[in-house]
Image (tube, rainbow, N blue to C red; front, side, top):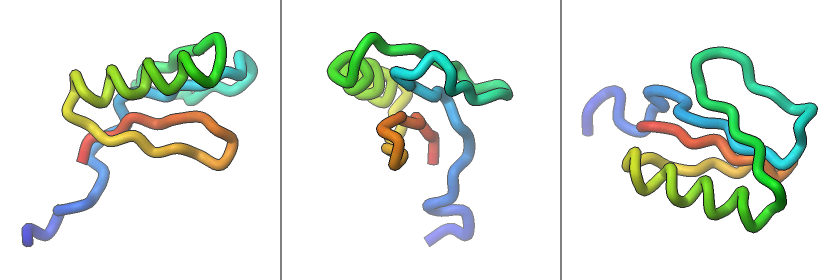
Length: 66
């Protein structure tokens, strides 16, 4: 096991349905119309970037690269 295995290398995107939530920085911030669209966007981005999805308690998703 490498020493950095499992550690987050970067946040690629933040997907939310609330236009008042915003993640500053270099990550892409996307606004979905509803929860179904949020899930579709997150799944598509994770597949394209070979990344993982973290679901926050508020329902938002963060796409991360490990």
